[in-house]
Length: 291
Image (cartoon, rainbow, N blue to C red; front, top):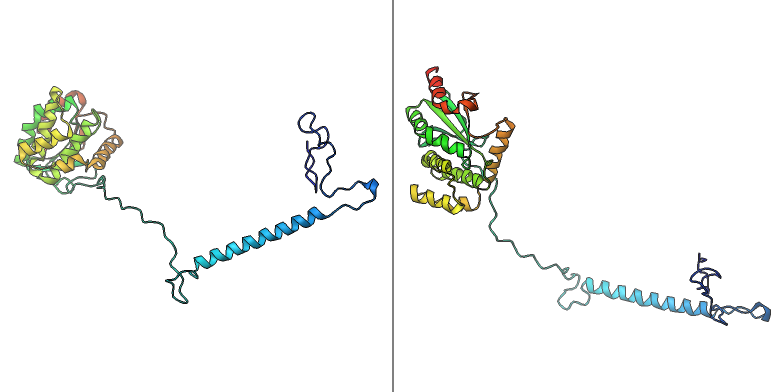
């Protein structure tokens, strides 16, 4: 352990510090005088330190004053009397001109549950399903082979019931089975619903039915199909995932409702048992007859 430094003392006391460390032979702390000589201790080191300290303080004070004068414009040739020079500012950051991804966009005909309601094969309802017709909700996924099989089996019948005004058909597209394809396709369906609602049903049905054979498209392929088959340009909407949040919301709602898989069919609030999905047409006909 070392003793706290005192005036003129800069070495550890004997026995402390590295082994054998001692002051140099003949060392005397500044200001020290041998008491045996009767001489008074000198105060020279104290005076020297005081003078040096005062000088450093004066230099520091002058530096501060000069800095203040510069800051207030006293040395600015362009500054008018009584006017301070403008404060220096940091260079403005370059504005980010990159296009922002419009996640969070909401398609005009989209429902709060993440679906689209058809009241005719070429017409989407704006809002809730109309009263009167049977309300059929289908939870579907474009990456789901069973959904592809379902569309292959029932698409034409569903379109016929729609044309006859017998039902309101609501598709809710999930992103569950084969991401990212499932989400890309669901976003493309939403793009079509927004840009050309008259083609929404056929676009969704044909793309989903192809999954029955394991066929799936990249984003570019989805956009090309819309252009080739319907003359509708949804390329930007597909590329930028414009309705990604809408699609995600549909999946969250489905989970919150306890939907266990796709396809799931609900007729007037009653779910068709999974074991009876192959008889969906019979369940719908019974509901229409009961209206």
